[in-house]
Image 1 (cartoon, rainbow, N blue to C red):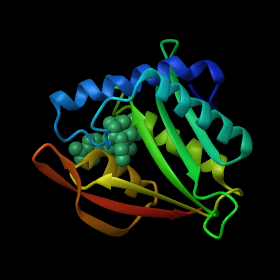
Image 2 (tube, rainbow, N blue to C red; image 1 turned 60 degrees about the vertical axis):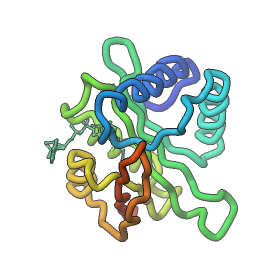
Image 3 (cartoon, rainbow, N blue to C red; image 1 turned 30 degrees about the vertical axis):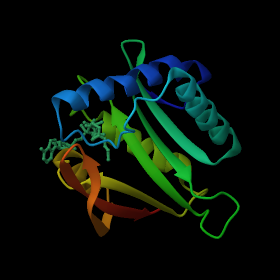
Image 4 (cartoon, rainbow, N blue to C red; image 1 turned 180 degrees about the vertical axis):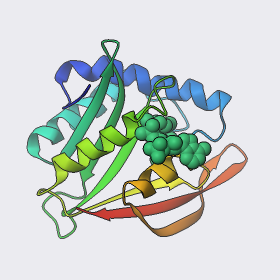
Length: 170
Ligand SMILES: CC(C)(COP(=O)(O)OP(=O)(O)OC[C@H]1O[C@@H](n2cnc3c(N)ncnc32)[C@H](O)[C@@H]1OP(=O)(O)O)[C@@H](O)C(=O)NCCC(=O)NCCS
């Protein structure tokens, strides 16, 4: 089930996020940008509170996927610098928990979040590791267009990853 964000989604989302810190230990190419130190539970609560508040203000457009009674994925689009000359732009982020990928959930989440943002934002951008073939192909199939690449943008241990930038007009 794809639905809007709810206040009681917090614990599932924090648990999912922490699981990505475990996953990257096994998969060095895992396509999410991490902080060097895993954020504390307290800072995660703050992150969630801000996300929830921004959805209420119309500055964030969020869809979550629920399966087995748990939130297993999230796609959020954040308005850039609300109240400014760039606030017609949004930035998209997405992550789905291991075990639930490659079943169309990502596609459904992105379509849901784009639908929620339509009429409120005009342009949505995202960035993706060039090595993240699944995400690259999903975004392109949904109509995102490449507009640039930042070489060696991500430094993970002694390895660098290039970051590809894409946009879609709503
Ligand atoms: C990237 C991610 C959001 C995609 O969500 P998902 O639910 O797995 O994706 P979907 O099942 O909706 O679609 C995946 C598509 O990629 C395709 N795909 C899968 N592996 C692929 C590969 N190695 N190369 C090319 N395409 C691939 C699938 O066939 C599918 O295409 P289709 O819709 O034409 O059948 C999800 O896998 C994820 O969270 N990954 C880990 C975190 C991450 O990388 N986040 C993105 C940060 S930019």
